[in-house]
Length: 365
Image (spheres, rainbow, N blue to C red):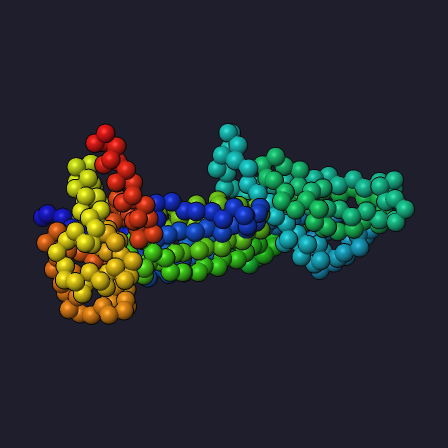
């Protein structure tokens, strides 16, 4: 069966980024134009994907030599194990793909031999062990290496094993999928989602004379494990992946009308009509005076003006409107024409006509 032809949709050609407000963890994205209502559809879909579907590494368990469970204190350590776990939950690790292992998804065990000597304690009598001190791996970048984990008050030599996995969303400890656990391994709750906040706004925008289109503004904040640009790129690909399931339905194909294109001859003919003065066409004295009073001097200035705006001018009534519409129809023109495909708008029509007159004068010399 032949494909069903659909009218073209207004769609953004690219996504703009507000670089003035961009930072490591925040970025504002602007997409326009969308058909009316599509801005909310896209904004809500992207927001849901950003908040629930983006993956990142997180600590899923740790083992502190000599510590059998989390409900105890450690000799020479100020914090108890419960507080150490709470501190470890704030760890932010960024995945670094390598040529040897570009897409590792298996949990990784990071092992550190913590060796605190008496000289390390200094004048305060204690040393703070930070996240960067216990994550010695080239496979992960530590986003917040200065995060305090625990404080040591006496010489201490212990082995610390931290297990890192890739996931999404929030996973409680009882639902962690750790196949090869070790004795005295303490499993933790993990927050994998790197996107902390997503706001979207839909504003009005216009294309030519069409003023009811949508502009989508998407504000994305992450915790640093994934950049906002990466998060938006990943979310869009995940959304497309889900929509592919619906695209497999074997029904009638549809095709979309392509934007109208014209050659130079068509554009020259159009510009010749638009450049005609109001006094050069056969209108009644009343209609001509009304247009002159509104500072409309050419056909081009007339056709880019929407009908409701024309009726706002003084002494301009239905009779004059019908007369003008009939005259424009004879010229294959109409009020409120969308000439943006020719680069012509209500704002630049006078400049375009002046440019056309210059070209005509140049070709006759």
